Amino acid sequence: MGANEPSTGTGAGSGPAAGEERLDRVLGVRQLGANIVNYVVGSGIFVLPALVAAALGPAALTAYLVAALAVGLVALCFAECGSRVAASGGTYAYVETAFGKLPGAFAGAFGYLSYVVASAAVANVFVGSLAALWSPLGEPLPRAGLLLLLYSGLTWLNVRGVSSGARLVEITTVGKLAPLVLLAVAGVFFLEPAYFAGFEWPEPAVLAATTLLLIFAFTGTEGALTPSGEVRDPARTVPRAIAFGLLIVTALYGALQVAAQGVLGPDLATEKSAPLAAAAERIAGAPGGTLILVAAAISTFGYMASNVLSSPRVLFGLARDGLLPKPLAAVHRTHHTPHVAILGHSALAFTLALGGEFGPLALVSTVSTMMLYLGCAAAALELRRRDVRAGGAPFVAPGGPVVPILSIGVTLWLLSGATSAEWRAVGGVAVAVLVAYALRAWRLRSRGSAP
Image (cartoon, rainbow, N blue to C red):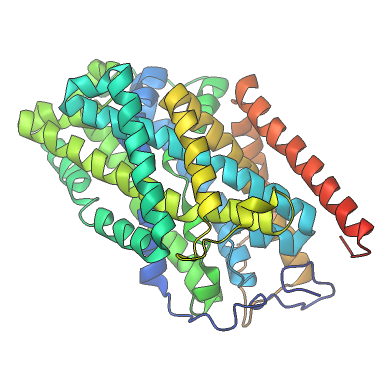
């Protein structure tokens, strides 16, 4: 039985998967926690304060509290799963270990949908930030040319070698947080208390829909946990790193919303392309706004570099497992990279970015991520029931089954805010997975192999 296949019986282990025993387990709490912060703080926070303020007005902070609660519950499930399953792959590995290959395939597909749509959404923020610095880039033809140049360059770099892409990610993350922390601190001295007056608790349906959009800015923990096979003492490290990372992110996001709302007031809702830059400009003039726009461009470019580095590997893995066309599993003869998967991912993300806007794209990405969260919460219950262990005593979320069940309930409530457009996208992927899995099973049976 493979290490990623469901184990049976109490105390069944989930140690390193085949081929992972040679990985160095060097990631500790600080490194993994920093990786979570780096994954989560990307593009969403540069745009979403305006969209949240437009929907909820002075009650905007309630969406952050609900989002933090929802993500915190799911984070506890991630912490438990990550302390029990040591194989690389994050949610994909957790769901497959708990429930088998077909549910694992769903997790992989929903994960990829989230990644590719998120790339397109972030590309729009990147172009919008540069267009705010130089307005001609906002015109249709220059915008399309910039997107083409962006994806072509990242594709070329990553086809040439994984080390090139990884080095670019490291460079672009340097200094990403500094301008945001500076804005959050400076905003305290320019707040207008009157801008927080008139608070009214929002309607549950409006709050759910707004929080669903906001959670786009909180997602990323699941991606940061994919190197679980290289974590030192996962039962201790994973839960502490998640707590460390999400506490920093929640505090930063809340402070930025307060700063933007306290400085701009009702004008915040109208600054939908670059609200934080507008707040910084109100505080420090044109140099302040320019600083935040440059930070947004660097941050979004860094995310996209990471996305083009990592996401094609999901396509490669699904093709290797027979769920996608075999050419996507091809490896370049010279550079030893999954070049076809990289090209396919970039082409799809470019097409989505060209024809979409940030808000709708972010919602599709978030809904597919919520499906992953449901899978993780359910996996936490099943892995605990079977007492699956990666070695040592695993982390156990407090309250027995309360946390996973609450996580499932809150996630379902947030999904009630999704529209038919998001459900069509998710449903189409689910049907594609079923068809691909059925074809794979038929091919294996025809060759006399087990599915």
